[in-house]
Length: 428
Ligand code: DOR
Ligand code: ZN
Ligand code: ZN
Image 1 (cartoon, rainbow, N blue to C red):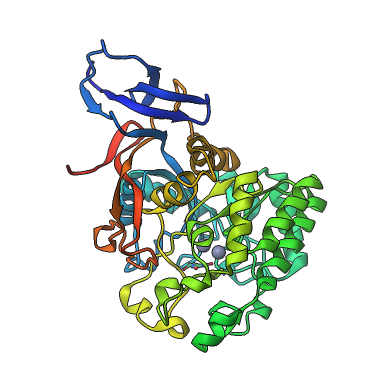
Image 2: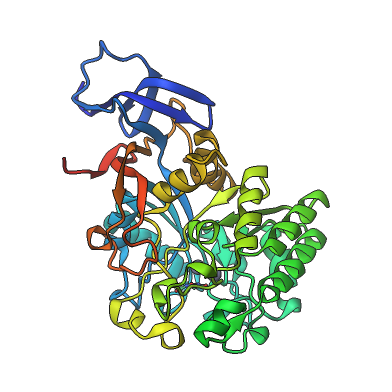
């Protein structure tokens, strides 16, 4: 039938139906028509997925699109291509653009433009305070009324606890999510990497774990008291794992994410004054990495997101002291997670699919993370059998700032389908 797409004979993992096995996936009119044996079907387009793995398209809850205002770093078209190349079909964009996404109009403008320019599903979060200045709350009712699903002050914390508590009460009333960047700015004191022996060796000012842990603790306490739903961004410390575990045990509505760089690299891996290893929160100690992996394994952390933070080569050429925080990640997250967590047996492939598609979709309250008949046809097909080396020159993102250049991984994206349309296909 015209308009049909058949992805034939791949190893299919569906964290929604829990199906796991070799099957065909039939797409019709932008939706999943079924998972099963469709060998007799005369679909218009047939893609051979034998030897490949078919997952629901990944859902990345933490992306900096840089549009509007910093489009030399990234824009809607380039982030859309990068997402598709990473197997990501839905993303939540952070509001620290220029100007920040602090009104319903700005949120809607980005989402409307993204429909035309990005190719994948883009959800824009709104900032919590006007201009991200930490002084006055945004119009939470108006922003929720326009359909926004999440608020975040990512890039910084709302340092005033009274304001944060009020934001939680209001956002809770509207049923939206708070994505929480936890960082006590008063405790940073010019730090640019983890406070440890490596920082001393490099002669660089350090950022202690308590910079993150104090705000994480504050905000889960506020969430428990207000009933707000909060999602802790980019957890990097052993303390965050302890805090999230305790908060959940106490009944707080808390979820949390870890990014690949934090569960793979420690400050021991920083080769010198190379800003591709500079991000916020920073690479922590080997003991923190171990605790994050354990938290991913035991379900304390239900999401793997990227904190995709593109910067230009010029900006990143200025070393740890002079360059902005942030690394790209949206094109490497699946391969890094598969290679570092699934291959060593820390997560099953099903758990990877949960943490990278099903759970984030559920937390944000969007379709996605499912291959059930009738679900939007958001699909990612990976080759997990053949190793390759990460080469930033191949990135579709404008950002090349990754600490993983040259690293050998398994998991090249072969095909990405968003809303039934092929948005990425590897040239073979
Ligand atoms: O590394 C980071 N980069 N952390 C943040 O919190 C902000 C982000 C950015 O916008 O570049
Ligand atoms: Zn952040
Ligand atoms: Zn971020």
